[in-house]
Length: 243
Image: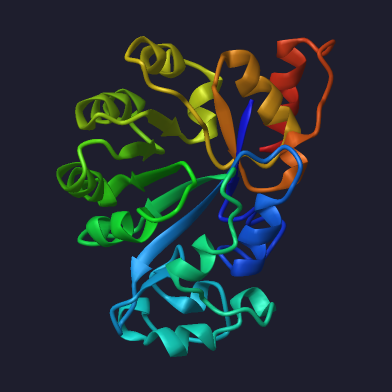
């Protein structure tokens, strides 16, 4: 099963840092890394999920008002590592490892596509919810770009949107994969399914048996085997206890 490291294994390393992405990309069993991109106040593309640095550090300020040097001085989760630029992160990912760039805002897709055009990695651009228009911008900029639609609610709408945009994958929150026909509907449309953010090996095993193509994992622990002999009902009970 295809494994993508969510924000460079954000439950295990300081999220979206150069160190996290580099280590995650070199973890046995990892096929790809995922990270978030938005534009900072001085115009550069930076790798950070949140729009305010206070969510990941003791610093304060909105990303769209801080310069790239100010963001570099932020200590992400007390690690001493700052918020990196996109190019810095791309530089540490080996060419055989895939890259999933989540677009955290509109009007950056074309610049992201330009940034990844010179690398050998397989690259997909993704977006979630209110930022889904960023995928339309990416499609207009490059009709051959690999795009991914993430969704946490309204699975039918998420799958339909992924198909309409011409995505390669429709990626739901993992809980959506526990019931219903989202996985089958996506597969019927030729879309892969990689649920996020998976942190438990039990969840991994449940969604694997449900037929997903891969997982977007927040920790390497999610890759640990739990045993083929455990029946699905028992796995569901374990998921309920750990949720």
